[in-house]
Length: 458
Length: 79
Image (tube, rainbow over all chains, first blue to last red; front, side):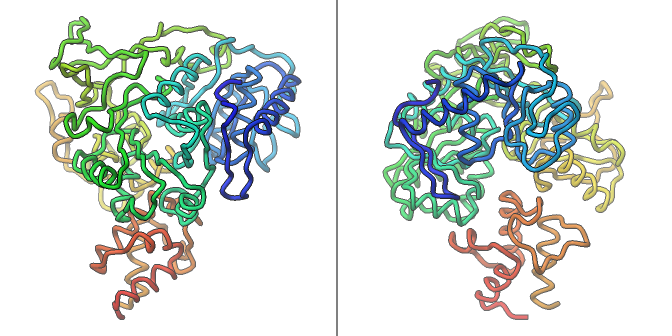
């Protein structure tokens, strides 16, 4: 059964329900059978961290139906837009609302005619932060399986591990935590309140949670909470991905965990790689501080110089290129593109700048594309500028886990309104957008905005 | 300014709330602005405003405006 080891367990923290072993396999198979009656097309799954959400996802994989994982809190108009463009066979977890035109009461498409997705296609994930037309990353069955195995191997995940859903399951990192645990027969605790919620920490204690996955803002939060691993004797592994964490925080958490007999892993990935590309072994963290580690087993990094030549020699900075079995098949922007085969050949040009050291450890040092991260979610900086243009000319630069947007001639209220607009449009928390008024922008001799000096000022 | 009003101001600024929000009756996750990300911003802002440091248990138990107000009073901060 795809991704599902015989020993895998799901624990629903909200209901106390436990599904494990043969019972879990059987329930997945029953639901998979029901999918056979659906018309051709992708399944949309508005996936919450609960039993129904995970069963729907696993059943789709088991049935060989491509499944797109979507934010259950996504606005109706965005969902309707995706439905119109991709014509899913059905929408799982649709909730209470009325189905859109062309869909039956149970959110199954009325029209029996539709594009059959490519047979290798398993999972579709939306690329985060894109404003106009969100597109899907197409991940094959092989990519999903290979990445789950490789992650499980480097983190040493076995049947004794207990991982909570500290990240949303429609987010590639969250999905990978689920996959890499189920594939090794471990336990996944389905919990919805997040790392600042009382319910989360009660679940950590009650279910003997052994690991915690977080993006940089989670670590900022854990620091503010004065997280003490001594209080949670089972919790001995921390993993971090989803953007660059400040080195002093990496060291702080690594020290804390090491003193408690635990481990801290820094990792690097992109949704386009299903998502993990590298993991820094915990025991080499001090020596390699600032690195994201070597490529996962089966994968490889190289550096593409400005003239297009590719090198693996240490110390040369260029664009990071990754090759591996987990790289996406490509993107899909419409229903027709769901039938496409692999167009990447297993190669991902990341848009990140970096260099390798003599041991093949990658150091990511910046970005080529104008990309920022807001609480682990990738956003196009050019898109941000477009969104707020009604409020004035804007220049957006990355600033750690947030972005700073300089707004020409804007007063305090205008800045506040612009931040709110960004938060609403992108469905990210308003505090991720630091909008500041400015009196013009620094310019390069070419007349273009000098983003580098703005970034230094941020 | 009363303690209640000071804390109210901190909520409005940290969570960037609209004027029509009933802050005094607000609970964690009632509104989009007070999610886990907002919570971190809020805790930081309260600590700065009243020059206090919350314990882990207090951070995860701060589930409403009223609870936050009681916690601030618990530090011996008065009107």
